[in-house]
Image 1 (tube, rainbow, N blue to C red):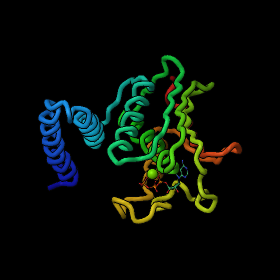
Image 2: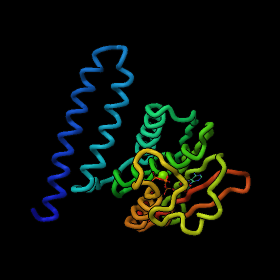
Image 3: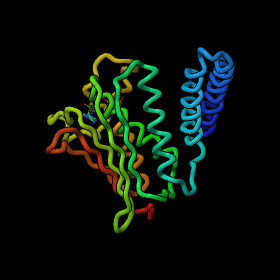
Image 4: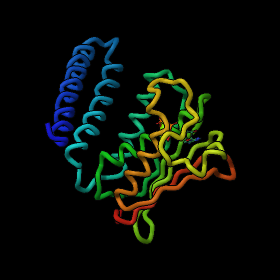
Length: 214
Ligand SMILES: Nc1ncnc2c1ncn2[C@@H]1O[C@H](COP(=O)(O)OP(=O)(O)OP(=O)(O)O)[C@@H](O)[C@H]1O
Ligand SMILES: [Mg+2]
Protein backbone atom coordinates (compact mmCIF):
# COMPACT_ATOMS: atom_id res chain seq x y z
CA UNK A 1 0.00 0.00 0.00
CA UNK A 2 1.40 3.46 -0.85
CA UNK A 3 1.95 5.79 2.11
CA UNK A 4 -0.98 7.98 1.15
CA UNK A 5 -3.24 4.95 0.85
CA UNK A 6 -2.05 3.49 4.16
CA UNK A 7 -2.91 6.78 5.92
CA UNK A 8 -6.25 6.87 4.09
CA UNK A 9 -6.79 3.23 5.05
CA UNK A 10 -6.11 3.97 8.72
CA UNK A 11 -8.51 6.93 8.60
CA UNK A 12 -11.09 4.64 6.98
CA UNK A 13 -10.75 1.97 9.67
CA UNK A 14 -10.76 4.48 12.55
CA UNK A 15 -13.85 6.02 10.99
CA UNK A 16 -15.55 2.65 11.55
CA UNK A 17 -14.37 2.63 15.17
CA UNK A 18 -15.80 6.12 15.78
CA UNK A 19 -19.01 5.10 14.02
CA UNK A 20 -19.38 2.14 16.42
CA UNK A 21 -18.91 4.42 19.42
CA UNK A 22 -21.53 6.81 18.00
CA UNK A 23 -24.00 3.96 17.51
CA UNK A 24 -23.43 2.75 21.09
CA UNK A 25 -23.97 6.31 22.36
CA UNK A 26 -27.27 6.44 20.45
CA UNK A 27 -28.43 3.45 22.51
CA UNK A 28 -27.29 5.07 25.78
CA UNK A 29 -29.08 8.28 24.85
CA UNK A 30 -32.45 6.54 24.98
CA UNK A 31 -32.01 5.92 28.72
CA UNK A 32 -32.32 9.22 30.58
CA UNK A 33 -29.87 8.07 33.27
CA UNK A 34 -27.15 8.05 30.60
CA UNK A 35 -28.24 10.78 28.22
CA UNK A 36 -25.75 13.36 29.56
CA UNK A 37 -22.92 10.85 29.20
CA UNK A 38 -24.17 10.01 25.70
CA UNK A 39 -23.93 13.72 24.85
CA UNK A 40 -20.31 13.75 26.02
CA UNK A 41 -19.54 10.69 23.90
CA UNK A 42 -21.27 12.16 20.84
CA UNK A 43 -19.47 15.50 21.06
CA UNK A 44 -16.11 13.87 21.68
CA UNK A 45 -16.41 11.43 18.80
CA UNK A 46 -17.57 14.20 16.47
CA UNK A 47 -14.50 16.17 17.53
CA UNK A 48 -12.37 13.06 16.88
CA UNK A 49 -13.94 12.50 13.48
CA UNK A 50 -13.28 16.09 12.41
CA UNK A 51 -9.62 15.79 13.41
CA UNK A 52 -9.34 12.42 11.74
CA UNK A 53 -10.84 13.62 8.46
CA UNK A 54 -8.59 16.69 8.51
CA UNK A 55 -5.65 14.31 8.03
CA UNK A 56 -6.81 13.54 4.51
CA UNK A 57 -8.92 16.59 3.74
CA UNK A 58 -8.18 20.06 5.11
CA UNK A 59 -11.29 21.87 6.31
CA UNK A 60 -10.67 25.07 4.38
CA UNK A 61 -13.14 27.89 4.12
CA UNK A 62 -14.20 30.77 6.30
CA UNK A 63 -15.14 29.99 9.88
CA UNK A 64 -16.44 32.00 12.78
CA UNK A 65 -13.71 31.87 15.40
CA UNK A 66 -16.26 32.05 18.23
CA UNK A 67 -17.83 28.80 17.04
CA UNK A 68 -14.46 27.02 16.95
CA UNK A 69 -13.61 28.41 20.40
CA UNK A 70 -16.94 27.15 21.79
CA UNK A 71 -16.33 23.68 20.38
CA UNK A 72 -12.81 23.62 21.87
CA UNK A 73 -14.04 24.78 25.29
CA UNK A 74 -16.86 22.22 25.22
CA UNK A 75 -14.38 19.47 24.43
CA UNK A 76 -12.09 20.62 27.26
CA UNK A 77 -15.08 20.58 29.65
CA UNK A 78 -16.09 17.09 28.48
CA UNK A 79 -12.49 15.86 28.82
CA UNK A 80 -12.25 17.15 32.37
CA UNK A 81 -15.69 15.97 33.44
CA UNK A 82 -15.20 12.46 32.01
CA UNK A 83 -11.84 12.13 33.78
CA UNK A 84 -12.96 13.65 37.09
CA UNK A 85 -10.77 16.65 36.38
CA UNK A 86 -10.54 19.96 38.24
CA UNK A 87 -13.26 22.57 38.30
CA UNK A 88 -12.20 25.12 35.70
CA UNK A 89 -14.08 28.29 34.77
CA UNK A 90 -13.57 28.84 31.04
CA UNK A 91 -14.32 32.28 29.66
CA UNK A 92 -14.46 33.18 25.97
CA UNK A 93 -14.01 36.77 24.83
CA UNK A 94 -13.97 37.07 21.08
CA UNK A 95 -14.38 40.21 19.04
CA UNK A 96 -17.68 40.26 17.17
CA UNK A 97 -17.67 38.67 13.72
CA UNK A 98 -14.06 37.50 13.86
CA UNK A 99 -13.48 34.85 11.20
CA UNK A 100 -10.57 32.67 10.17
CA UNK A 101 -9.95 31.64 6.62
CA UNK A 102 -7.74 28.67 7.37
CA UNK A 103 -7.90 25.07 8.55
CA UNK A 104 -10.70 24.91 11.14
CA UNK A 105 -9.68 21.48 12.50
CA UNK A 106 -6.16 22.78 13.09
CA UNK A 107 -7.56 25.68 15.13
CA UNK A 108 -9.63 23.22 17.16
CA UNK A 109 -6.49 21.23 17.94
CA UNK A 110 -4.46 24.33 18.80
CA UNK A 111 -7.08 25.68 21.19
CA UNK A 112 -7.84 22.33 22.84
CA UNK A 113 -4.14 21.74 23.57
CA UNK A 114 -3.76 25.18 25.14
CA UNK A 115 -6.98 24.88 27.17
CA UNK A 116 -6.12 21.42 28.49
CA UNK A 117 -2.59 22.49 29.41
CA UNK A 118 -3.98 25.37 31.43
CA UNK A 119 -6.50 23.08 33.17
CA UNK A 120 -3.90 20.40 33.85
CA UNK A 121 -1.63 22.98 35.49
CA UNK A 122 -4.40 23.73 38.02
CA UNK A 123 -5.37 20.44 39.73
CA UNK A 124 -7.28 22.35 42.41
CA UNK A 125 -9.21 24.41 39.87
CA UNK A 126 -8.89 27.88 38.42
CA UNK A 127 -9.87 30.14 35.55
CA UNK A 128 -8.92 30.11 31.88
CA UNK A 129 -9.62 32.97 29.51
CA UNK A 130 -9.62 32.60 25.74
CA UNK A 131 -9.60 35.95 23.96
CA UNK A 132 -9.32 36.95 20.31
CA UNK A 133 -9.12 40.35 18.69
CA UNK A 134 -8.26 42.00 15.41
CA UNK A 135 -4.85 43.60 15.13
CA UNK A 136 -3.59 46.04 12.45
CA UNK A 137 -2.59 43.17 10.19
CA UNK A 138 -4.37 40.01 11.37
CA UNK A 139 -5.67 38.40 14.52
CA UNK A 140 -4.32 37.78 18.01
CA UNK A 141 -5.56 34.83 20.07
CA UNK A 142 -4.62 34.52 23.74
CA UNK A 143 -5.11 31.73 26.27
CA UNK A 144 -4.35 32.84 29.83
CA UNK A 145 -4.79 31.10 33.18
CA UNK A 146 -4.34 31.87 36.86
CA UNK A 147 -2.33 28.75 37.70
CA UNK A 148 1.27 28.39 38.90
CA UNK A 149 2.85 29.46 35.59
CA UNK A 150 5.27 27.53 33.36
CA UNK A 151 8.29 26.07 35.19
CA UNK A 152 11.20 28.45 34.38
CA UNK A 153 13.60 25.62 33.50
CA UNK A 154 11.48 24.42 30.57
CA UNK A 155 10.52 27.85 29.18
CA UNK A 156 13.42 28.09 26.67
CA UNK A 157 12.51 24.77 24.97
CA UNK A 158 8.80 24.72 25.74
CA UNK A 159 7.65 24.08 22.17
CA UNK A 160 10.16 21.28 21.48
CA UNK A 161 8.84 17.70 21.35
CA UNK A 162 8.89 15.60 24.53
CA UNK A 163 9.31 18.53 26.91
CA UNK A 164 6.89 17.73 29.72
CA UNK A 165 6.44 17.74 33.47
CA UNK A 166 3.74 15.05 33.27
CA UNK A 167 4.79 11.86 34.99
CA UNK A 168 3.42 8.33 34.72
CA UNK A 169 0.02 9.36 33.44
CA UNK A 170 -2.16 7.80 30.78
CA UNK A 171 -0.68 7.76 27.28
CA UNK A 172 2.96 7.62 28.33
CA UNK A 173 5.24 8.21 25.34
CA UNK A 174 2.77 10.64 23.83
CA UNK A 175 3.31 13.37 26.39
CA UNK A 176 5.18 16.55 25.73
CA UNK A 177 3.76 16.78 22.23
CA UNK A 178 0.87 19.21 22.77
CA UNK A 179 2.81 22.44 22.42
CA UNK A 180 4.93 21.05 19.60
CA UNK A 181 1.69 20.31 17.73
CA UNK A 182 0.48 23.84 18.52
CA UNK A 183 3.64 25.48 17.16
CA UNK A 184 3.73 23.26 14.05
CA UNK A 185 0.12 24.06 13.16
CA UNK A 186 0.35 27.77 13.93
CA UNK A 187 3.49 28.11 11.80
CA UNK A 188 1.97 26.04 8.95
CA UNK A 189 -0.67 28.78 8.85
CA UNK A 190 1.96 31.52 8.68
CA UNK A 191 1.55 32.53 12.33
CA UNK A 192 3.68 32.67 15.46
CA UNK A 193 3.09 31.45 19.02
CA UNK A 194 4.81 32.57 22.20
CA UNK A 195 4.49 31.84 25.91
CA UNK A 196 5.18 33.84 29.04
CA UNK A 197 4.46 33.89 32.73
CA UNK A 198 2.36 36.91 33.63
CA UNK A 199 3.69 39.18 36.37
CA UNK A 200 0.33 38.86 38.18
CA UNK A 201 0.64 35.03 38.06
CA UNK A 202 -0.40 32.32 35.62
CA UNK A 203 0.72 31.44 32.11
CA UNK A 204 -0.22 33.16 28.86
CA UNK A 205 0.06 31.88 25.29
CA UNK A 206 -0.28 34.32 22.40
CA UNK A 207 -0.86 33.41 18.76
CA UNK A 208 -0.41 36.04 16.08
CA UNK A 209 -1.68 35.30 12.62
CA UNK A 210 -1.37 37.73 9.76
CA UNK A 211 -2.99 35.47 7.15
CA UNK A 212 -6.37 35.69 8.79
CA UNK A 213 -7.68 39.17 8.33
CA UNK A 214 -10.57 38.60 10.76
N1 LIG B 1 -0.70 26.81 31.09
C1 LIG B 1 0.37 26.19 31.60
N2 LIG B 1 0.74 26.42 32.90
C2 LIG B 1 1.81 25.81 33.43
N3 LIG B 1 2.63 24.96 32.75
C3 LIG B 1 2.31 24.70 31.46
C4 LIG B 1 1.19 25.29 30.82
N4 LIG B 1 1.15 24.86 29.55
C5 LIG B 1 2.18 24.02 29.40
N5 LIG B 1 2.89 23.92 30.54
C6 LIG B 1 4.10 23.10 30.76
O1 LIG B 1 4.62 22.76 29.50
C7 LIG B 1 4.80 21.34 29.41
C8 LIG B 1 4.68 20.92 27.98
O2 LIG B 1 3.34 21.07 27.52
P1 LIG B 1 2.85 20.14 26.32
O3 LIG B 1 1.43 20.44 26.06
O4 LIG B 1 3.79 20.24 25.18
O5 LIG B 1 3.02 18.68 26.90
P2 LIG B 1 2.19 17.99 28.06
O6 LIG B 1 0.99 18.80 28.39
O7 LIG B 1 3.14 17.72 29.17
O8 LIG B 1 1.78 16.62 27.38
P3 LIG B 1 0.70 16.42 26.19
O9 LIG B 1 1.51 15.93 25.03
O10 LIG B 1 -0.23 15.43 26.76
O11 LIG B 1 0.08 17.74 25.89
C9 LIG B 1 3.79 20.77 30.38
O12 LIG B 1 4.17 19.47 30.84
C10 LIG B 1 3.81 21.81 31.51
O13 LIG B 1 4.90 21.58 32.38
MG1 LIG C 1 -0.34 19.39 26.83
